[in-house]
Length: 420
Image 1 (spheres, rainbow, N blue to C red):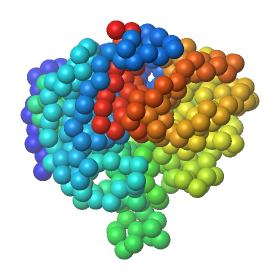
Image 2 (image 1 turned 90 degrees about the vertical axis):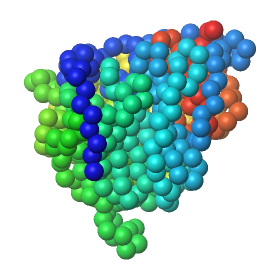
Image 3 (image 1 turned 135 degrees about the vertical axis):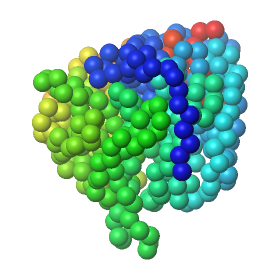
Image 4 (image 1 turned 90 degrees about the horizontal axis):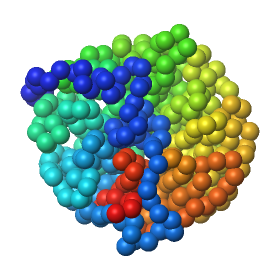
C-alpha cells in the first residue's frame, strides 16, 4: 500500500547538491556520515580543554531512545527516535540554533527481537532541499517514507519483511532522482530457525513518488547494515559501492542496479559502511568475538590493494584524508595508516568501547564511546590526544558536524557542542 502526494517542486535544486559529479557542499550533513558517507566536515569551534559552561550550546531531550545519527540541512536537524517497546517510531526535527523540537511525526511500528545494542530507531535519515527520507521496520514490514522539511507525509513505500538476527538498521542514501536502500538480509539456514530466508536486494525509489524504479537481487547470508557510497571512475562512470557478507565489496550502476564488479572479500558479517578515501574504497567485516579485518579495494576494477587485521574495527567505519586513513577499533584502539599502501603510521590505545564511526572536522579526529565520552584526536602523522569529556549518557550513534558545530546524539538526548 502506497500513499503518494505529488510535489510540484522541480528536482533541479536537489540535484545541484547531491549529483553524479559529487560536488557536495562543505556545509550540511545530508546522510549517515555526511556528504557521500565520507565522515569529513569543515572545522568546528569547540574549545579545548572542554568546559560545559562554554562549549555546550544546548542539550535537547528526545522522546524514547535511539541510535539514529543527526543529519543537518540549514538550520534544521533531523533524526529518528523510538519507544523502548517499539510501539512508536518518531521522525524528529530540531532547530539547530536553539535545540527546540520543531515537529515530531509518529510512525506506528511494532516490537520484535533486537540485538542488545540495537534500538527500534537505529537508522539515519537522508535529506535533500525539499524532503526527509526515513526508514524503519517492525520485522514484518519494512517502510521507507518521505516527509517535507515541515513534517508533512508525502509518500510511503512498503518493502516487505526484514529477516535478521539483530534487528533493522539500514539507512537510505540519495543519488540523482533516486533514494536507495541496501536490504541485505539473513539467509543462512542454520540461523533462520525455521523462518523463510530474507529477500536481499538493492532498491531504488523515485524521490518524488516512492515508486520502485529498479531492484537488484542479491544473495542472502547474514544481514548487513552498510549504507552505500558513490565513486566516479576515471572513465567518468558513477559507481554505487556496497558492502555485504554475501558479496563482499561490490560496485553497481546506480541508474539500474547492474553489478559492475564484486570482490568476495568478507568471511564474516559486514556492518560498517564503505567509504572512499583518496580513491581507495574501504570496507570491513568481523564479529563480536573477533576476527575483524579491513580491506582496501581499488574501485576501478575491484582488486584488493591490501588488508588490515590487527585491532581492526568491526562496526566503526574508516575515515581519512590527505593521504592518511584512520581505523577506530570497537575496543578503543585507533590506527593511522597510509592510504596508498596500508603502512602503519601510528597505533594507540585510547580506551572505551565504540559503535559509532569517527569523523574528521577540520584537523580533528572525533568519535563518541558507548559510555558517552567524546574523544578528540589530532588528524595527522603524529598521535596527539587533544581532549576528552563525558556527556553522562551512553551513545551508539555517529557524531555529525556542520556550521562549525559538533552534534552528538546519546540514547535520549541531542547535544550541540561548540563556542556559544
